[in-house]
Length: 122
Image (cartoon, rainbow, N blue to C red; front, side, top):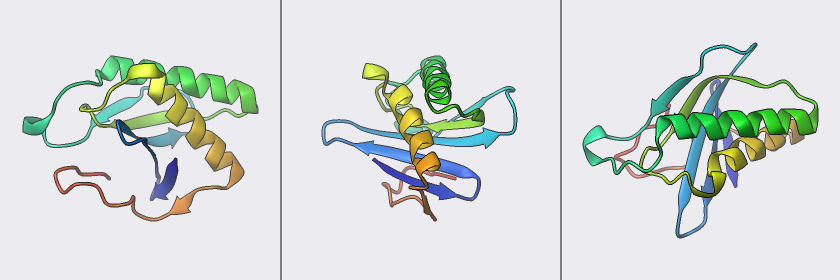
């Protein structure tokens, strides 16, 4: 999995060939409301990832990895692609992998690797 930090947004991608997944997050100092941001052009979206399911998976995955590592990460914003699938609890996997990479110091600074021109990432 590839992970980068652009400004205050952490991004991780899982590229498997048959299914690619992207997750971006902005961390917060404490628990609060989490804003969900669907990326990509509205007219070209094929909805696969429902916002409520993305939020559920990310918060479960974050709680699990916080417990496992003894950390206390909190979120303020989640960036996702609605055209992606939420199968196999992929967002739980992505947030856990991202936090583990942050804790290990395995994060690249800079823009995210190029994606198709129809998609915009902060």
